Amino acid sequence: MARVLLVDDNPASRLTLQTLLQAGGYSVDAAASAAEAVGKLDEQEYELVLSDLGMESPEAGYRVIAHARRMDYSPATALITKDHDESEPVYGSDSTLVEPEDVQGLFTQVADLISARARRRVRRQMRHTAA
Image (tube, helix red, strand yellow):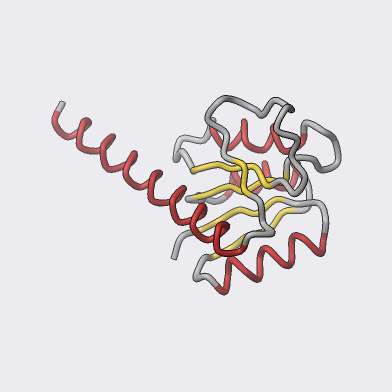
């Protein structure tokens, strides 16, 4: 069962997404703030980190994603957004935006992100073994 860290300061959104992801077969830890998420990232390994774009501050979601990307275990990362303005810049050109209103799309994106992470890890292990 893939481990997902879900970060959202809105209790209703967090509980709804957590319930959906658990029903989809994922093991989900939830955090209500960037600080709580950073602590969980340092304590556990996750295949995927989903962080709300804006939480206690406009940059809080970006801080969570940046911290996750520095972890040795390299979790897949994505930003959750409900009302993203396409003209607004997004953290890094490789950031994935997940829109939770589309439940089937949410499951597809989560599965794709976790699969891509697994493929990267296998390629990295194969290169390391061949070296």
